[in-house]
Length: 282
Image 1 (cartoon, rainbow, N blue to C red):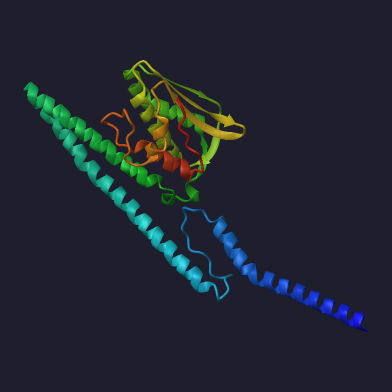
Image 2 (image 1 turned 90 degrees about the vertical axis):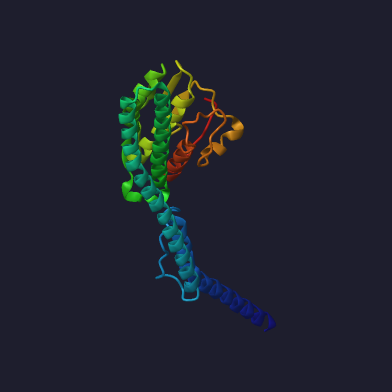
């Protein structure tokens, strides 16, 4: 009899354990769905979490998280709007100032004044370049575009378009600018990838000696798409390869024309496309 009672108690204990585990599993399903929802969400979206499947005990926590997400999103959008508006507001007066300086240069025959006007024109050009890059940086932020902006892009055709835009500048320095591209199609934002390649080429042309070489390559390596710019310049010192990704940081040997934003823009655009930006020896 004692043996039968022992077996009965063991069976009851086992049933209690099974029912307890089942109850815990069912109770945790909404939490698991919430975890999956957070894991699926794009880092740059900052969209509020759904409250529907959330248990009432956890709802205050989710509401607090949503409030924080909305605050961060509003702050990010405000920063982007400020940079965009500031860059736009700068471009119009700078264009007018540049036109006035060109008129003044045509009316002035004094050599000393001509030299000062030339210096002013150079300063205005640098300021205009910085304003344009600030605008590009604001538009390159991952939160500035949505999934609908990503389309199918033929990268080898994009390379040809960018080379056409930069060829005169390279030829003026005697630089041999060419491409070795395989047909390559990726999913991305066209104008962002165009801006990325423009900044990489701008950086390469600035630091490649006269009569040097720049080659753009694209294709697939082990099934992964790649885009590469190789130049015959001195390269970036290993110790500075992380620093040059920072905004307004200028590497050793950079000219005075550099704003320190080009590679920061490349970093932002690469990150928004889930790509890895690598700085190697060439």
